[in-house]
Amino acid sequence: MNNPMSLTESSSETKGERLNPFYRPVVEFSGLVRREFLGLMAATFGWTLLSSPLSAQEKKGKGGKGGKGGGDDSSKARGPSFQGEYVLPESLAEFAKVSLIFGRATDKAITASLVPKEATEAFLEIGTAKGKYVKKTAVTLLAAGKATEIVIDGLAPNTEYFYRLNHRKPGAGSFTQRTEARFATQRTPGSSFVFTIQGDSHPERPQSSHPDLYARTLVTAAADKPDFHICIGDDFSIEKVRTISDANCQIPYLLQRPFLGLVGSVGQVFLMNGNHEQGSLFNFSQKDERRDVAIGVQKARNSLYPTPGNEGIYTGPVEPFKDIGPLKSYTSWTWGDALFVLLDNYWHSPALVDSGFGGKGGKGEKGGDDKKNRDWWGITIGDAQYKWLKHTLETSKAKHKFVFAHHVLGSGRGGVDEADLYEWGGQGKKGEGTFKEKRPGWELPIHQLMVKHKVSVFFQGHDHLYCQQEKDGIIYQELPMPSDHGYIAYNEDRYASGKKLPSAGYMRVSVTPASAKVEYVRCFLPKDETSATKHGMIAHAYEVKARTA
View 1 (tube, rainbow, N blue to C red):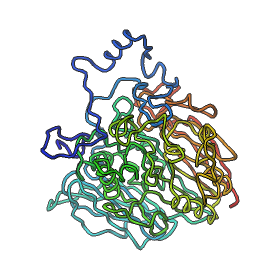
View 2 (view 1 turned 180 degrees about the vertical axis):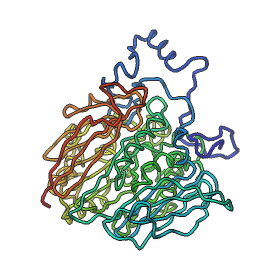
View 3 (view 1 turned 135 degrees about the vertical axis):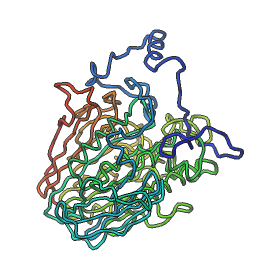
């Protein structure tokens, strides 16, 4: 590898190397910038090009390759394609030197995960008042590019703490002191708090993900002082990694550390798998490199981020996976008056859910992803996860219940438009099969189960736009991309109803015992701001009332 924090690795070949079946090489157009190339294609095939991101930034971008499946909407992206290394802007370089991300908070403790760019010594000073630190951790040696976890215990419940990170090169004199930040322990019923959510960031797609915009979005989210930040998936695509090894599978996860540390240093970060991570039971069950990919990416995720397992205030899968250990694929917890349920679409389905593209997932290939003939009844969250979901919902007394998944069914396009189908809604699209026949032992389809137990909002990503819909009293909320510098509403034609808006931005949810206010915060690069498009503006907002369990 030329740079362990880069999205790509060295292209030199090694005898006996294991090639990544999902690899997509970077396409370079010699002598032509991307837009000139598109101009030639437009002249040849009669395409219509938008003049600039600003002149049409509130227009909608329809569809993307793949139709019913995950696809790749890069063909609809507006330029210019980002050129350069996907890193933090220089003004935020301090967060690349040492990335700090919190996780696994309980009422009495929290875990700080630190990854330095170079070998570093560090410690934290902690207190309950700004600038007044009454506790500090031991000086700890941090290995370069590795995650070291520091458990801070002996904390009080429902408390906001202030802390300062101190770091230096090993053996150096004085420590560098980072600006004071905060974190919170588990909120008790009756308290108020904020959390934030991001949609698919796709840093591997230079045509629809700009590092400066992504960083600006996360800095703005951090200013909201969220107790935690949820990533809906498709943040760690493996497609730019050419060969498979444990170290190479860590590349996308290391690339994201400085970015997610912008918000993860003030609140916990929760990760979810999307289809482009390629962590799935289907891949794990193969006898070729797909199994190596599935193992490698899940190990990278769980080692480089403080992901909760079935522990403390968190519930999740209990049985370990061979060669991985605790899977940590889905989880739930209660925070204040709210229940949070993070579902996993991919690690519990023997059938292929969505490869995202070809490779050993293309039509006609072994394990091919033939979207037109996909086994939609075969796609499942699995009996164990369904049983856990049912128990979690029916035993919770929370006034607010929030459920998250990368997408309805883990594939397809649309929100409520897909909610009647297969195990989610109980109906085959063409009348094939019945829910009782296809899911013996399941009480209700997933949507009806959420209705019965009064889920307030279901959050999903995958489709790369903002859209708020409602079905049977549940809000279906599609999440915008945080990094799309083309400012497009992809796949809006797959949403027949609802409030639709383009990216980029994030969701801010302010929870009180009585209600939850959901806001779409728009984000722009400075050059793209106008009187009508201001960074940090609230593009849409709504409120959901507390519901009796």
